[in-house]
Amino acid sequence: MINFQDVSKDYGSYQALINANFKIMPQEFVSIVGRSGAGKSTVIKLLIGEEKPTSGRITFGHYDVGKLKVNQLPQLRRHIGTIFQDFKLLPTKNVYENVAFALEVAGKPEKEINDLVKEVLDIVDLGPKANNFVHELSGGEKQRVAIARAMVNRPDVIVADEPTGNLDPFNTSSIINLLTKINELGTTIILATHNKDIVNQLGRRVILVENGRVARDEEKGKYSL
Amino acid sequence: MISVATLTVMLLALLVFSSLIIFNVVAVSALNSIQEKIDISVYFKTTAPEDEILRIKQSLEGLNEVKNVNYVSRDRALEIFKEKHASDAAITQAVNELETNPLEASLNIKANDPGNYSVIASYLNNDSLKDYVDKVSYAQNQVVIDRLASIINVSRQAGVGLTAILAIVAVLVVFNTILLAIYSNRESIEIMRLVGASNMFIRGPYIIEGIIYGTISATLCMAILFPVVYFISPYVKIFIPDMNLLSYFTSHFFQLFAYQLLFGVGIGIISSFIAIRRYLRI
Image (tube, rainbow over all chains, first blue to last red; front, side):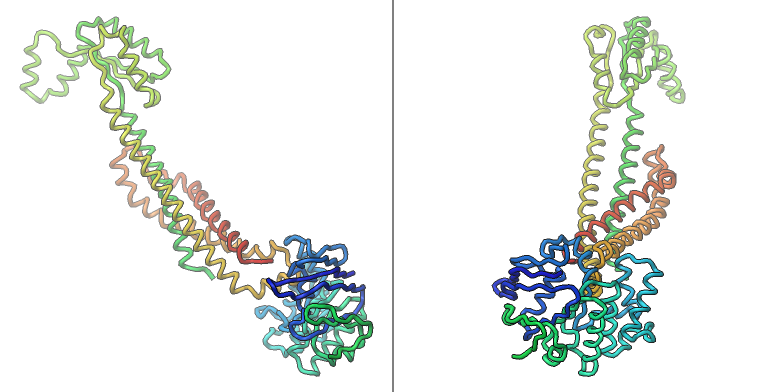
């Protein structure tokens, strides 16, 4: 489904990613690991079309991501749910509205939005907090809102960039459990992290990025330095 | 959040723009009312026979350029002269002492278009009429008309120039305002992009903001213009009796408002687009 072919990305003279080659199949749970600055975020930015590769080809389904025009990117991004370390929630909207937002921009009808958002908030266990504002939530709750928003339009892939970076161990494992659950429901998960414990506990495919190169790519991998 | 500075600059540009429109109307009507007063008078030698003059009148009426021709006979000219100076005993007495009528018969010719006077004048200066025509009065008026027309033209160009400059300033200021709005919303814009909002969905509010600035300033501009026009209308009437500025303003209110909306909203949209293109990387 996702295919990186000889992908390189330079920022000026700095090479963030060098000749990356890997494929991700539907319903896989892939962890992309590496130190900070190793190139994990670059992989994610390239995948969601926020950056264009300097060379090589990235395909997502039938999209040739590197060649998409600006006005075609929204279509691609509706197939990808994104979760970030800093949550990226709208502070002026409540929990319900933050999740509904992802459907509104896609022009879904009100009734459908209502049903879908309730369903998703139940999955992430935030039904009772639907009317709370973002600043009234804990870090773990915020990230669960972000996950709800990422999954609400039923994307093919959820990309999580250090989703547990700001969370304590308890919330970390609850977020990872949630992602595993979503993966079992059929959504591909790409998790970028430098948290060794998470990766080792998951026991799923691991792609190790080091100095911009794919150093290792193992099924049921471990993250060891 | 509406920026007062932005509105003020846009309002200024609109005021100059609409003053230009109104100035144009006043100038054209001033020119017309002066041109209305222009005619050519041909004075015939006292020896010219009347039926010859009437024949020339007829041939003039046959010309396309001529609107109408008015014949003033020698006797009529004398009557007019006497009436005019009836209160002046010395002149009346002097005229009465004359044995022959010294006044010349004349034709007053009005043209359809002021540009045609030179054609008519050259027709009258034709050699075949030389025996009858004494003089053709035309040249003096033309200088005044040309001068007025060129003054109006220069003022109009200055107005267009000023409008253009203010429009550019307004575009820059609105651009800056929208830029700030984009900057302060950069996080939600980023989120919109991430959840796959279409470009129009993200840009829409900023374009609407530009439209709102245009609409508000056009409305304010009309609100300011109305009392101003109401106040200056009587003064304009003194200079140009045919011109009723106030009734022009009220009868063209919606047309003027539409022009301003077009201008204001145009400025708003153009500057929003520039700001979005430059700073809203999607």
